[in-house]
Length: 118
Image: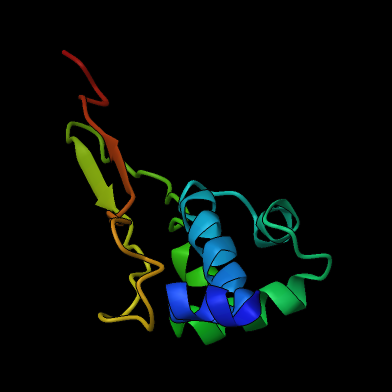
């Protein structure tokens, strides 16, 4: 059975399962789900095992895919303020195709208006 699986997929069952789990984890992480919660949701009992597998498959840690924290918008009287938080973006060409189709965009904290309306 394992020879047939490898012949069909080009991967061992364990490797294929790791890729499927990581592929399922990426949208969760990008949606802001904590690493520990994501690890358990995709079938890992220990977050450290999830992190090690994630790094081995993608070349990055899971934290790379978490959205950047929103920064407080500061506004001066009479002016509108816009603050763009920089997103942590993984470097191009991660190992394997587990991140295919996942696009990350920077988080932004935008507040417009006049602090002292006249």
